[in-house]
Each structure stands twice: as C-alpha cells, then as structure tokens.
Length: 253
Figure 1 (cartoon, helix red, strand yellow):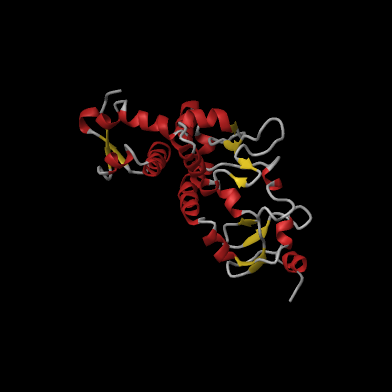
Figure 2 (cartoon, one colour):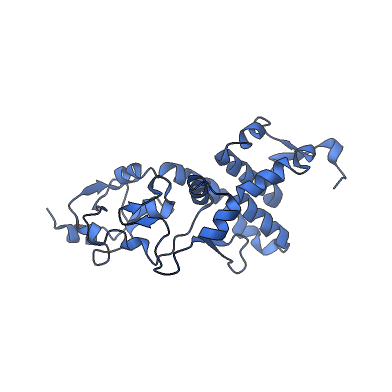
C-alpha cells in the first residue's frame, strides 16, 4: 500500500468520482480549524439562504453583518464572500471544537479538500504541508465523501444557478441599466426583500404565473422562493416565458 502522502500526491491529477483519497478532519488533527482562517469563502445564493435561516437572521442583516459584496468589472452579479473576523481573520462560526453551523456550512466548506470542474472530475485544493488531514489513514471514495458531506442539495442549486450565470455572461454587455443589476442581486441574495416585492407591490395584480400554486408555497418556503426568484430573472432579463402580463395590466405602470 502506498504511504498516505504518496497516494494523495498522485491524486493531484483530475480524479473520477470512484477515485480514492485519504483525509480526516477532526480535533485530533494538529491543524484542526486552521483552514477556517484567512480564507476566501464565496457564498452562493443557496449558501446564504441556509446560513441566514440557521442564524435566524433576515437577508439584509446577514448581508450587512457577515458578508462582503465585491463588484466585478463588467459583471451584473457581484461576488459575495463570507466576512472573516477583523482581529484574527477567522471564520465567525468556527470554535475550538469545530464549526458552530456545521449542518448548514457553505458548499465550499463541504467540498474541502476537493475541487470540482464541469467535466465531473475532482482534484485536491490543498497539500499535506498545509492540511495534515491529508496525511491521516482514513480513506474515502470521492462519491462516498460527497454523500457524507450532504453535497447534493447544494449541487442541485448550483446547477440551477448556472442556468442564470451562463447566459448572463452573454447578455452582460447589453445590460446598462443599474436597476437590472439591483433586481438580479435582490432575487439571488435578498430573498426577504424579493418576497416583499412579490406580495407588497402590484406584482400579483400584473403578472400571471406559470404554476399558480407556487404563490402559496413562496409565502413561507424560502427555497421555493429562491427558485421563483431565479425564474423571475429568466423572465425579466432573458425573456423566458415563465410569467405573463395580465390583460387588465397591459399599458399600466
């Protein structure tokens, strides 16, 4: 059997889901929680939804307290990253015993030490010098590791998000109205405000929804609300026929 360091060194190539790698992250590992310090954790809309609900916070409050919103040149959607503590640059949710929000930790945290590409393969994003977990004896098949990390709901939402981000790259050069960018950000990262937009404006008087039963769902179901908001982007930005202007609303503002 190969030594653990040699096995993982060979794994730095792209790996298939059935590939084996060695990793363990627990209090007994000397570098435990060090990977949660001075690191850039990009949050997806689903990450933010899980986190703000776990903490019992509103979208506005979570965005202000726990994120940095970084505009990207010539991009409609900014990068949203988790804000580290100012003093020690640690994740605000890490403790001596581990992650305080473990069940709702972001996609990037679940994936570590793996990275994935669009071709369905994986590689290691760290090495044994920095991450002693890669020197441990515990062996995983990648597909088993992903299942253990409960990654599937995050992958499903990332796939849904890609139906916006990929075509957005085509249209971004045509979008000059800053209000469109604000609307897109609200839909993806501020679902509380989007819910108010739907139920406290003339939205429902003006638009027919493809599946009317969704309206009752999004009153209380935040995940369905996020999916609904993504459909609104597809309608408003890409012109997909997911909503219809009601006849009695045509020509009105």
